Length: 207
Image 1 (cartoon, rainbow, N blue to C red):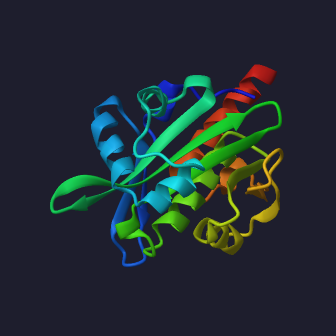
Image 2 (image 1 turned 30 degrees about the vertical axis):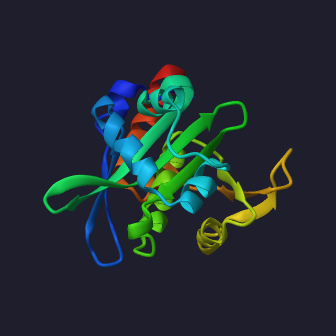
Image 3 (image 1 turned 90 degrees about the vertical axis):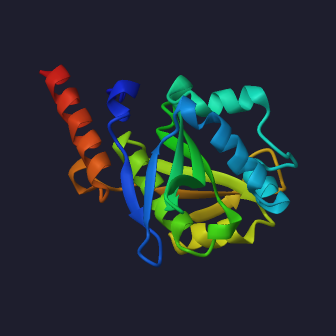
């Protein structure tokens, strides 16, 4: 597999749509987002933070925040979903995902601002993550969540994920979706381009 390098990935951002048609931009987090990302995490309700991080916290620890904003380290990536609110780009969601080359899978976690939940942003963001996973050539995408997290479980079920016990922790449930899509058939244009570029690079190496 030919890896997608960070310099290549930076050119990719996506425009999604909320239920009401509002534009939602998904892009890789940047160092300039450090304080706004932390403020976003603080602004989540206690329940949303607990569900997202599988435990109680009021903000990201400094070391974890640094991991979040350094995109691409150890094949881990953070994206933010932003909208224009009163004329300012505002984070309304975030996701972090990791590519595991050993089993050709992508693992992810995500959150949506409580004020924007119910607007279809989580569904659109998860579909976008599926495109990103497909562009890596992953065979599956999965996440773990608390058994009590009805919102995430409902979203995953709606998008066709299968459920099983999360290995090693009875409090968690794992949801998995197999990826059966050719690079040229990936529905997100930017990640279709990334995947076809990767395929072309692999073909040239095979010559």
